[in-house]
Length: 66
Figure 1 (spheres, rainbow, N blue to C red):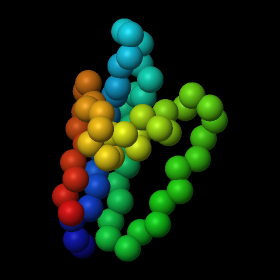
Figure 2 (cartoon, rainbow, N blue to C red; figure 1 turned 180 degrees about the vertical axis):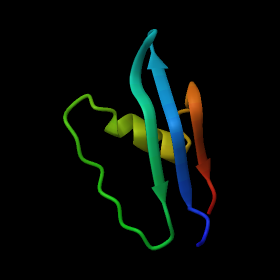
Figure 3 (cartoon, rainbow, N blue to C red; figure 1 turned 135 degrees about the vertical axis):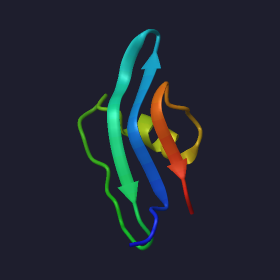
Figure 4 (cartoon, one colour; figure 1 turned 90 degrees about the vertical axis):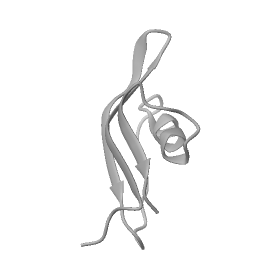
């Protein structure tokens, strides 16, 4: 098994003292195709910002391994 290209573990992001993403987990390996779906305000954009390195997690971690 190869190491994941992206790994987000128990990531929590806070804004203005409230949680906008709580304990998110995501692991993407080489060659995988991923779709991120959810309701408005569910944290999709925040999760993408974590994955891109634009935003940092207040708790947990986001690692780019590729």
